[in-house]
Figure 1 (cartoon, one colour):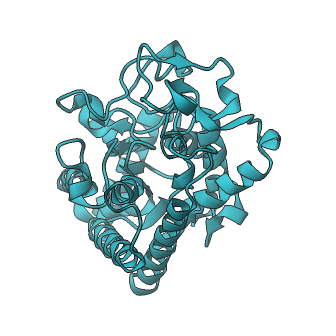
Figure 2 (tube, one colour; figure 1 turned 180 degrees about the horizontal axis):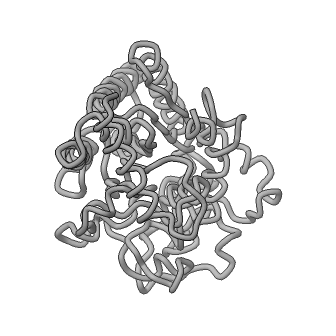
Length: 357
């Protein structure tokens, strides 16, 4: 690296540290860039037209500081908020569509959009697809490179974390269309998701990303919106099996890219196994209700989503699900803890180790 380029890079890092860490410990990574769906959306959908796929109204955010409905699909914080705290950030990266000043970019950016998926068709006319999120990131990375030079910006991006929580809506949409009746079609669909996700990660790699955090699919067959159709309120195991197939495909993609791309590193979070452990001993983790949503209406509080006129529970930390699809902040906190330092639930390394690698 030339003397001038090194100076620019160090100036960039110093600028980042100054604007994000006044009076605080230095963060574990320079920045966090977040992609995915409603499990990690922090408010991008607030800026989209219409009322669908939004959470910027009560009772969402009832446990967020100030009781503010921020656009998070949660009673408070979501998983990426807690992960950011673990990485010593004062706050989670801002929603891309809310950013008005370039200074915010050096903390990272959240591109996630509730209702989105790996496939463009999943989020059509409802949210921002993963491909569109990557296009938005392209604009950010280009702006950084134009302002600070390609080599300095790439050094900054290579040390940053790129976090994904995606594919859930693709799987749920496939279940709604097919009922999972054809095993061969399931394999083809999982293969399609895997190949598309691989191409998306490769695109980000070409734009400077090197450290990838991928949250696997949870036990989707156990979300209240599906349980409510089961007479016993049990899980739909066929849907859980599809989640596991998807997780296997994603892990294969990550291993392939790691072996073929220089400096590509990753941490895959086995959310499925985290949820399974909680189900096996809910009291150990502070939960008493695993099947019903805290906020909603009807059977298991899952006939409708969480709205301003919905009923909601008082002991929210005892519920795993906030609404008929999304976890409470208590559940998100546990998943983020497992991601950061839970060797049993991460492959091949924890997020903590990835951050310092």
